[in-house]
Structure formats: C-alpha cells, structure tokens
Image 1 (cartoon, rainbow, N blue to C red):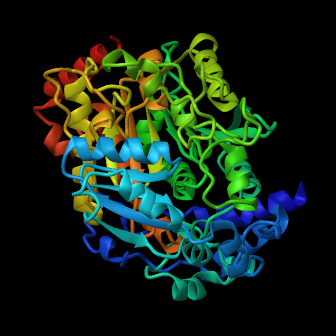
Image 2: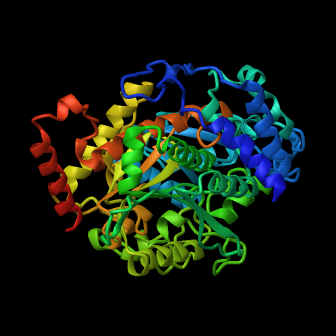
Length: 553
C-alpha cells in the first residue's frame, strides 16, 4: 500500500495543474495547425516531477511486458513470415454497382476490407490474390485502383511500440520523437500504445487518485475469462433527488487491431477526471451526467493483437469451425435484419461464415463480450436507476461521424434531425479546432448514396450488416444520441497509426466531447457567458425541455 500511495502522490502532485495549461482547451483558442502535426502547448511546470512521477508509476505497476511486440523483440523476418507479401490496395468507387461488385468479390475471396467510404474502398490481400480479384471486377475498377501499402510486414514493423525504456525519457527527450510539445496534463502515458495489463493498472490508479468522481468497474468477462474494465466518471449533486442518472457510454476496442480507439477512450477518461472542478463546463456536465468509459470491449482480441497478430480484428471465441475463431463484435448485437430490406434469398446477405472477418454469429449475442455488455446495460437500467442517453463507439479509420441505422437505409431513426444536428456540429468542431475533415452520414449510407425510393438493395453492400452496437444501444437502450466515430487517418497508415498521433487524436475527441457535453446541457454546443444568457434564460430552458421530452420518447 505504501508503494501505491507514493505513486499516487507523485501523479496527483503533477495532475493538480489545469489540463493543457493556460487555457489550452479553452473555447476561445483555435489551433488550426494540429492537422499539420504541430500542436502548441505549454512546457511542463515541473518537468523533473513529471518524469519522476511516470517513472515511479511504471516501476510500481510494471513495465511493458517483454513478451509483447516491440521493435527490440520482433524481427522484420518474423513479420514477413506472418504477413508474407500482403499489400493494401485502394479502389476508387463512383457507383453503387462498383461498390457491390467489390463487396461480392472480397467476400468470395475472403479478403480483409480495411475501410469503405463514398469515395474509396481499401482491401488487404496477398499479392497472389490481386489478379483473381481484378478478374471478378467490372472493367472500370480494374484500372481505378492503386497500392496504398506496398509492404505490409514493414508497415507493421515500423508501427510497433518502441522499447519500454523510451517511455521514461521525460518531456524533453520525448519531444525528439514527437512533432508536438507535451503538456503536463498530456501525461507520458499517452506518448505510446499500451498492453491490456498496463491499461488496467492505469485505470485503477486513476480511481485511487480521484476517488470522489472516478470509479473503476468491471462490466463482465470475455470468452477467455478476462475482465472487461471500465471507468465510471461523474459526481451527482447532493440535491439531485431520485431521478434516473443520465449516462453516456464511450466504447473503444471492439476491433482488436484498432489500438487508437483504446488510447482515445483512455485520453478522454483522463481529461474528464482531471478537468472536474477546474473546467466549469465539464464540472457542470459531470454533475448532471455520468460517463462510462470502456477502453476495450474486446480484451481477448486486444491481447492477441499484442502477442501474436497485430492485425487481428475479431474476438478469440471458438466458433462452429475450429480453424476459424472469433466474432465481429460490431455484428453481434441483437438488432436489425438487413435481409428484410433486400430482394432475393435472405441467406445470401447474412454474415454466416465463421471464417469471414465480419462474422457476427448465427444468433444475436453469441459473442460472449456482446452478451456481457448487454447484461450490464440492462442491469444498470433495471437495478441502478440509470438512464442511458447515448454512446460513442470509436473505430478506425477513415474519419467519419456515423449515426443510426447501420443495418438498413430504408429505416430512419425517429430523431433523425437531432442526430444530424449534433453530428454536423461534431464535424464542424473538429474542422475548426484541428483542421481535420470528418464526413457525416448514416452508418448504412457511409459508402454510397442509396436509392431510398425503392428501399431495396438487390445485392450485398460493404457497410451493410445487422448487429451494430450503435443500433442496438440506440433502439433497445433508448439512447437517442448514439454514434460511431471512425478516427484518424484517411488511410496513409490505416490501422497502424503512429504513436505521435495518439495525443492529437485524443485532443481532437476531447473537443468533440466538450461540444457534446455542452449540447446535452442545452447550449447547442456553444457555451454561453453570463452576459449572453441574460434575456435568453427562457429560450435555453425551452431548449432543454424539448430535449428532455425527446430523449424520454
């Protein structure tokens, strides 16, 4: 206990300073250089103490496990044996027919679709599969493509975390490996990716530092028996009464290889914890709402991506085929059947092959982690007086803000106007604060604009699929502000986003979270000053009342 107390004291001493220092996250400060890789920030107030704190924490809670991937323990030759001559190709699509042809061909050849937008589709494949794929595509697509990553094994090697000792070099040394200066509050924890064990210890440490408003919880077990850790952050007013506690969920790591989603969820947890009682907006928000942060809903897959296969996507649960393990968690929840909106044999449109990357199971909630999350959410509502108002499901990559529904474009959510309003506000906030461009669309429509007049799709679409956690949370949990946000980048690195993008991506989503908090508090994403609110109190109260009525539908 003494060692934990020492680490806690060191971390708390430095964390007492305002996040970003000097109003770095203030609404009046717009940093348009972030997208160019330059993030302005104040130098640490106590650099030696910061270094000492991080060194102590890693000493007491353990260094990066040696068995996990690092450049010092993994050779490029071993990765070439694993990934062979794999490449990633980008196809430029202009019509739904082209998209459908790519979906059919990639499904037939069991290829790994990395990303799909209205402009392009990225597909990973062995070089010996290029010719067979092109032979299945229309003539135009046979020439409308280029190689995005020509040597996947080398790209994986270049992306591996540096040796563990590099995380202890302090702010001055760290800046040599990053294009941006680190602030005290960014914490050296976010200068690199971390394995599950380290993340769990960090989350427990965060609770011990901020016990007043941070609680470490476990929402269930994975198929291999690992805990699914989470943080509940909030501080209800003493006079809050017995009304249900409105709660927002932030989830990452549904797909194991998307490491940036886990670090981003952790960055937001850190920011909320350290900004409470400092930032008026965040303090007010956490008085009225709880935020549950789940950094990785797929702990088995994440562990496997560190130990064995950096590009593993699914869970590690056994399926009906012993040689094909794992479920796609974002196809495992019990809502939406796209076959109801299609022509032809419905079986053609189901993700029923366990060897497929998007296999969600033959029945809803077959995936252990999906069932555990659903059970936890229902118990929170039924036993703990929780009212879920929304969730953000973080993914990578392609920089998109998506809202329900994912399973079909022929069905529209009842509060579509509100979903679009907040989504476009999120995209605008990102553009104004970091300069990055995020597209906005329904999740079903993220690839091509569908012909909604007929409401039917004759063939399989790349983004089509039942069982999205966003759809299920929106519909079954009545969480009417539910989104999926696909983080950086646009494909230069794909799932192998470098470590120097962790903090810029985290800050990007911090601006989004502050905007969303302000929106839910009734200010339409614009925090009003005291002078501005004079004479507008009635209008603001009306906005809040309309939202309360709408969320209660």
